[in-house]
Image (cartoon, rainbow, N blue to C red; front, side, top):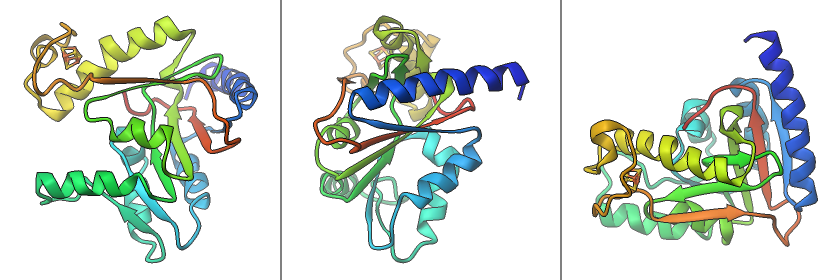
Length: 214
Ligand code: SF4
């Protein structure tokens, strides 16, 4: 990666981590997805139950394949191939009682706020309450200057891209632009803005100096 980009990533990530800590959340920085993978795996102890939530980022760094190789870790995975819709929903409900949930958010602000938008809500529900530990892997491409730009990023970029990825029948899958649709398959139903947490360190944000996910 361009050395100036590396330098920007490190400096900006450090500021965000300091702001997360002021909000009683934790943060750390990995220069690459490969480094982030090892550091996140080290945060999952043997015996843990881990809830998998929808995330291109964590799949992209190879996290779920590596966790599947650990027999002492139980993954609650609603994305297993061949699951019936009701089985997948049941796993989403079970996941709320897991020890750890691992996913990503859709944007993070310089002052340490985490912004997400869900269709079904299981990811944001688990972020808010349930699993004892929440680990979010967030590429530096998701950093936004403030809340307005974060919401705009999610609404006009991340959501249409995710809709296209999921192949849903929504306005944005036709031209890539959000039309604030009312489709039954709309993926933009539940916003969350995480401003902090009473349980210090329950949320850990692993910032990564690469473009990961949407
Ligand atoms: S509201 Fe509808 S059109 Fe807009 S991004 Fe979401 S799914 Fe696409």
